[in-house]
Structure formats: C-alpha cells, structure tokens
Length: 151
Image (cartoon, rainbow, N blue to C red; front, side):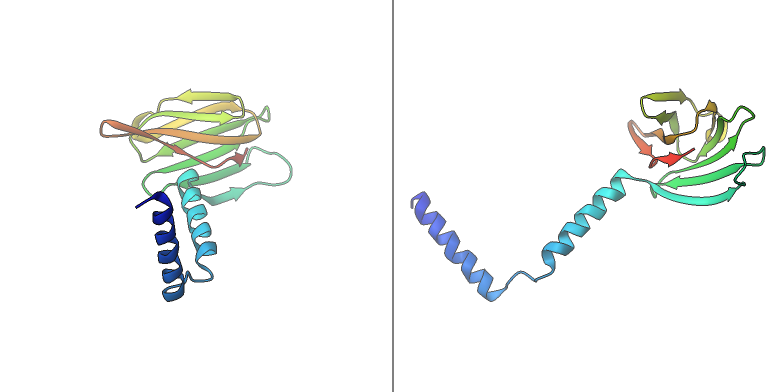
C-alpha cells in the first residue's frame, strides 16, 4: 500500500464514522471551555475574601483578611495599613513551606516561615501583589501561587 492508498482509506473511514456517529454540535465548545477551566484551576489558587473592614479614610483599623487555597494547601493573609501608609502582611500556611515570597512586579521579598507556618512582611508598598509559597512534599517541591491582589 502506498501513502495515497492509506490516505484514501482513512478518508473513507472518516466519512463512515461521520455518517454513523457524527460529532455532537456542542462538543467543540464544551471541550474548549473544559480545557480553559482546567488551565485556570492549575494556574490560580482559589481566592476567598474572608473579611474586609475599613473606611474610605485610612486609619489604624484598616484591615483585610484573605484566604487562598489550591485544594491541598492554604494561605491566610492579614493585611494592615501602617502609620506611614505602607502595609504589614501577616500570614499563615498549613503546608510544609520552605520559602515564602511576596512579589510586586519586579520587586520581591523572601522569608522563611516560623513555627506553625507563620510569616510576616513589614513595610510593603501599596500595589498589585502576589504571594508564592514553596512547599515541600516528600523529596519534591511545588509552588502555590496566589492570584494578584491589590494592597
């Protein structure tokens, strides 16, 4: 058999299956949506706004509590505004974290978690922020990355 014979046979086979069992009209759209949703699930952690207290005027009582989870590990962040207008980020993670990085564009700070997964970042400027937690799972490591959020 030549390549042309193979191509003709596969074309006839395709026509047969298109007649006997056609592709459902909505299958392509459903598959695109499923693949896109799966990609988002792996790319972003779940963001839950737990509590937000504050007023339009900055004060010592401004506070924001955020919880992020990827279904396996969680991060809890408590953000307060300092006297100089910057932010203090106190956090906790339930994972066996080896490193925590707070990233704002090109700028980033790194810390190691203390006992019980506690960590903190002082004097953080306002802006779009992301927290990345490096987690140890046996001999492997993975990173839990939050979506960007505004401080």
